[in-house]
Image (cartoon, rainbow, N blue to C red; front, top):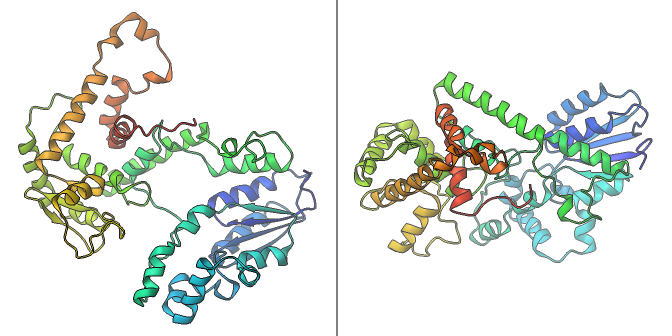
Amino acid sequence: MDISNQRILVIGGSGLVGKAICRSLLSHPEQQPAAITITGRSSSRIEKTLDELKALSATTEFSGITGDIFCRSAFKDMGRKTILSQRETRERYLRDIIDPLNQEILNESYLYRMIQEERPNIVIDSVNTATAIAYQDLFSESRCLLKEVQTVKSAVDDRLLEKIEFETLSEEGLMEMITPEDIANEVLQCLQGGNSGHDIVSALDSSILGPTFRGGYMRERALESLRYLEKKYDVPSIAFENLGPPKLAKLLYEIFIIEKHINLLEPIKMDEKTLSERCVQTITDDSFLRQSSLSVGLAIVLPGNKILRGEQLAIPSQWEYPEKGKVSLQQFNQFADKGWIDLRPTNMKVWIDRLHELQKEIASPKEETTHEKEETGSNTIRNQRFWQQAVEKGNLGSFISWIFLKEDNGERIKK
C-alpha cells in the first residue's frame, strides 16, 4: 500500500511505540501521509508529540485527540476514579462492560465515535488493548458497586521496573527485549505491502514479534545506566512488583538478602537455621529494605510463622482470601511460596539446595574437554564465565531467571 495522501489514525500515538510508528511513517519523503491523528490520555504529551512530528514533515497535517478510548464519549475525560465515585456514572460504566453489545453502547463508545468522525484510511493500534481491557478489572469494579465503595485502583499505562526485576525478565530465554522502533519498522513494512511474515493472514502466531538484536543491545545499555544510578544514590534497585507474578519479586528480594551472607557460587557451609537467623537480622536492621518490600505488596515470613505486612498484599488475591480472614497452615505456606518473602529455615533449605544444583551445573568437568571447548552453540551461554560475571556485576536477576527456566520450565518457545 502506498501511504501517500492517506489519512492515518494512530491510537496511543503519544506513547513510546506510537511515536516510533509515526516517525517511521514519515521516514520516506516520497511517501508522506496526508494526515496523521494521534490519540492519548494526556493533552501535554500529545502536544509535545505533535511538536516533534511537525518538525519531520512540512506536508502532513497533524492533529491530536485526548480521552479514554475504553469508555463512552461522555466519560472520556472524567477519569476512572471520578466515574466510579458517582452512582449514576458508575452504573452506566459497568453496564457498558457487562451488558451485551448493542447499537446504543456502540454509538456512545468513544473509540467507535472517534473512528467514525475521523474516517481514517488506516488505523494503527499501538495501545496494548488486551492488557488495557484486562486492567479495567471488571470483577473488582463489580464488587465495588455491590458494596458501594467509592474508590478503585485505576489502570496503569506505563510500568516502572527496578534494576534486578528488569534484568531478570529481559534475560536470554525469558521475555528478552524488543524496541518500539522494531515494531514501527514491521508496521510500515506491512502497510507498504512487504512480506514481513508478521501479518495475521500469514497466521496469528507469525504476527507476534520476538526479541531483536537491537533490543538485546539496548538491554545492556539500560542495565549499565541502572547500575550507575544504583551506585550513585546507594539505593538497591530490586522490584516494583509491576510485571510478572508476585513470585518474581519474592525471589528477587530473597536472593538479595541471602547474597549478603553467602557466596552464591561457592559451596555453602552454613546450615539453613543459621542462614535464616542472619537473614531475619538483616531485614530487622535494614529499615529501607524492609519498608520497600512491604510497600510493593509483599509480606515477610519470619520463623514461627509470623509475618510482617503492609496495607496491601499482592498475595493472596481477592479471590483467594478466606471469607472470615482465617488462614490454614496449608494456605499460609501456599501464599508464602507464591509471593511472600520467606525467611524461615525451611525456605532457606530450598535455597541452599537450588544453589547447590546450580553450582554442580556450572562446575561440570565437560568444559575442560577438547570437545566442549569447540562447542559454541547457545547452550553454552550460562557457563562459568557467565556466572562469575553475574556475581561481579551484581546481576542477581540471572540467578532468578535460571530458577524460572529450570524449576518452572519457563523458557519461551518462540525465539
